Image 1: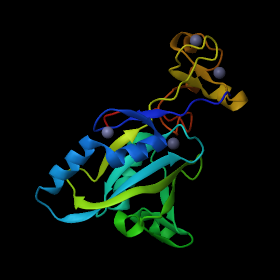
Image 2: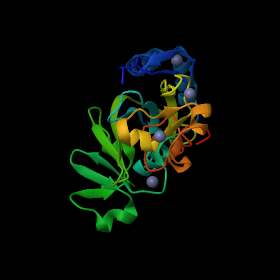
Image 3: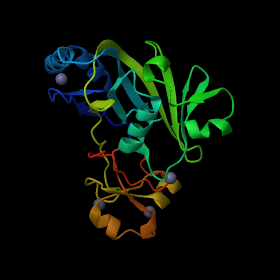
Length: 235
Ligand SMILES: [Zn+2]
Ligand SMILES: [Zn+2]
Ligand SMILES: [Zn+2]
Ligand SMILES: [Zn+2]
């Protein structure tokens, strides 16, 4: 496949668009974000560590999320968020891996191999400034993500424990027949030669079984284990 240009995304504060790396820099200086932080910090509540995380698909630079998380929230909350926005198909197991320690669901701890701890650990106790974590969803048809700390601050947190700062827009997917925008993909074709995208019209006329045709969603789990989204709000 020809190399595509880097995907871009919009800043959730000011709406400007950047690539994944450009967004890391932008979020440090965005005036509207600064205002939001200042007004939260002026409000009631206890100070806590707040982390800006960059979450990327381990195998494709197309898919990324800039998230901000409350340090006191448990890893469980981040696990749930990643499932909602990108991954959940049929309730597979997942784990974080940080400095050779696995963090798994509390209920899985008795069955876990190697050195494992519970995802009930607070995020700030697991992620230091240099932490590079891996996250795996589904031990069979695995989706693997990389999570790095883009920035950290101390402040007052409002609302849900994970907040979306930015995400990649849907990568360009062209119908393999007519090159129009594709909304579907065929798993048979994906397994055969990787060229698998179809527009609505050509999905209708396609030779392979309907059951093999899945929606082309904005997620690294596209085409895996029958994943059909959500991947778009609400999540
Ligand atoms: Zn901005
Ligand atoms: Zn599944
Ligand atoms: Zn087409
Ligand atoms: Zn096909």
